[in-house]
Length: 137
Image (cartoon, rainbow, N blue to C red; front, side, top):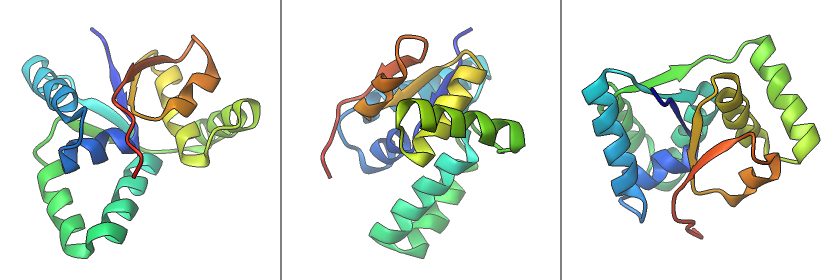
């Protein structure tokens, strides 16, 4: 069974109904059907919360947390080992800090990263990507 890790922009695309949201909705539906949640690093979840707070305020963050409780989404913590691996990826591939956590989790779990961010191609072919349409905000 294929595992998927969501980057922050995949969740933001889903929430905003931007191009690519149908693909993310389908992944959530499949995750429900097979009872295997989509995965996300706590660092990337923080990125979603920050972006939503900045755009729409704390009431939208509260709504997000209520909605997320019903989604097949598992937020995985960051420990020293994951943080070290993410830092190594950042140093080797010049990724953004939070992006390095999404890449590290994806590689650790032999998963596929769901993202609209073209920067992840820097990591090379060992990082499996499900690319969503890129949107300049």
